[in-house]
Image 1 (cartoon, rainbow, N blue to C red):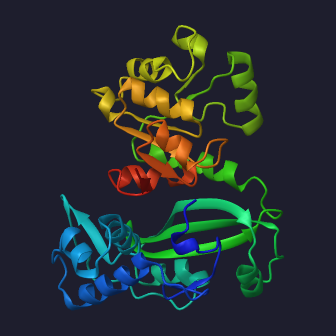
Image 2: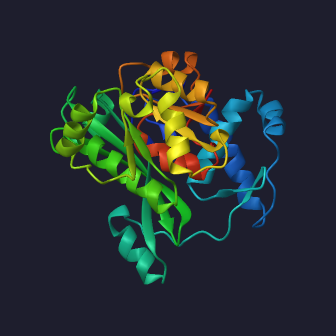
Length: 309
């Protein structure tokens, strides 16, 4: 995972200002754009990325990151090819613990959508803030808070890995179920033989989770980095009109190559495997995610979320 200006993983953040005192450029740009948003009416267009980039003398990607966070927090929303001011904000309860109850009291339906799940040794600052043990593995979750499917905030949570060791597997399943609920067809592929693949699915309790699973033997015998399994999934499911509508997700450079060679429109690398961001991008990843849990949000945003190449 990339941390701006060497920000330590898990450094506590209050009002967008990291505790270590260094303010990443995108935080500063985000704060300035937020001031502009407060002065504009609902539906008002936000200047293009080039304007604030020139005004604040930063790269367009810096502006893009600031806008992404404001969209996640519900202050802005995508409209066509631009970004506009979102509608009236939900009256937020003071405590996140009472979020669900507070939203329901206002006659709206609460919800949460996971956008980030990563794991790292607990740094000093986080240990002092939360009471966790310095150096112990911790999970970091970021979830968008929803009210009637409208984004109204961003929740950040830290929990010791020892308390929930299988959290990544649980959220991977949740991501698959979320994709299916969005009307997307999910196909699971593996380089293992069918008997091994079935044993893995049984161990995870994933048998029957998706309509189709494929191994190399199902696609003529060639696995990744060849495009065969991606194309076999495209042909069998008939879920897309063209391969450019297919998204390929994996955690190795071979996964990325198979997607690129098949002609997939989105090829997302996941940084939880053996290959890091650099290797995934070199193999053709169009996006890099901290966890597969962020895939539903990426697809809903039309490829706008995640770390874009």
